Image (cartoon, rainbow, N blue to C red; front, top):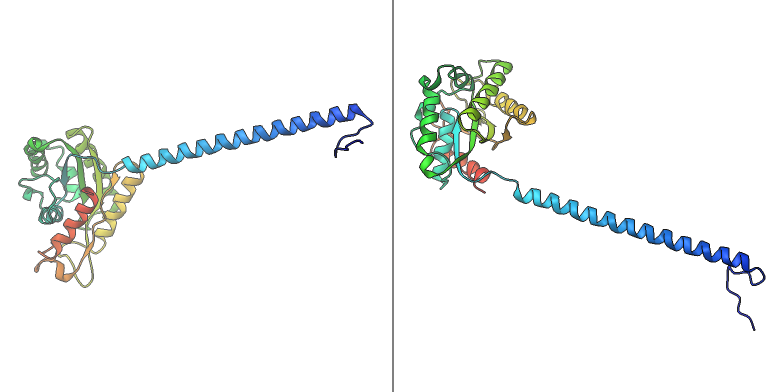
Length: 249
């Protein structure tokens, strides 16, 4: 009694040999494909791990945080300290008042005789005992009476000057806070806040600085009477919490 196996020819052993050889080739191909699939899986896993590692290690560097801008800037850092923030510079920053981007840029030629850079240097040196200033927050301010290119070029110059004074520092940049209508800031055009945000976004896109916190629009109940520009005791914690959420967490 003979057993007939499908695919084999009992009457032709040469055909049988060819059939078995082809089966071996198919087996080898399957093994090769399996090996490739396994290799791809390992690569994908490694890649995912690298991405996860990058996400975990990305964040605001540790250390003391410097800042520059104008009265709206120290208005925000006052709020930051009010809600318990401790990383920003401490000291007399009231000379920053009126510190638009172009004012900071025009003062560089005068060196330390310019009140803005003098205040910046004093704060930097005065906070050395607290630790290294690894980060600077630059808030772009304008009255809205200067064109886009002028303010942009001034911001580029200020960024370079920050790095000259504090080599290796990481700079975060933000546009100034805005206002919810009908609230207005006397002396600041409605176009100024969105223009500053646009310039900040361009500088970030060009790799000149990192994106800083998005400053909010303040309402009438959150600002002081009179000029209506600065946050009151209700508005300061709002600004402060934004800084804490961005820089401290």
